[in-house]
Amino acid sequence: MCGIAGFWNLNGNIADPSVVRQMVAQIRHRGPDDDGIWTEGSIGIGHSRLSILDLSSCGHQPFITADAQGILSYNGEVYNFKELKCLLKKEGIVFKSHTDTEVVLYALHRWGPEKAVSLFNGMFAFVYFDRRSQRLWMARDRLGIKPLYWTRHGNVLVFGSEIKAILKHPEILPVPDLMALASYTIQR
Image (cartoon, rainbow, N blue to C red):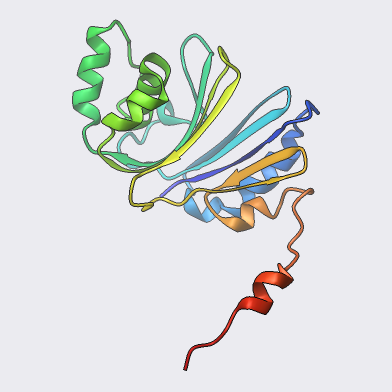
């Protein structure tokens, strides 16, 4: 299990790296082997890593493509990553690790999220930022085995593998929804 955390200031305000660090610290138990953050302009992405397939530092996340145009924070396992890696190698992609993370990143970057996600067989959640299009993509496996929560509050989109990471963002206040609470009934 790994952890994903971050946010995008939709109004263009600069992303504060210390906020991403605080969010990642909340989910450190999900990945005690390594952590990292990436910020640029109004977006910040963080990761807490549990090393499984490649124990080396080559699997550090957020993982960035060689051209620095794609950034990924990923949790899970894509079981058919070796087959996808072979396809990507035929297209000229050179890999530096033995992780499925790198395969997921290059599949997203090369083929686009719509095509790539349809090819993934596994349990996963990810946040992928494509600098070429300035688009942020979030997805999880079809059954939701790997969690990914998100909320939009005003001009900020906040996401994380656990809600407690989201609550570390200063714009997100843990206020109960009184309407939802009032509509809740206990069945006997």
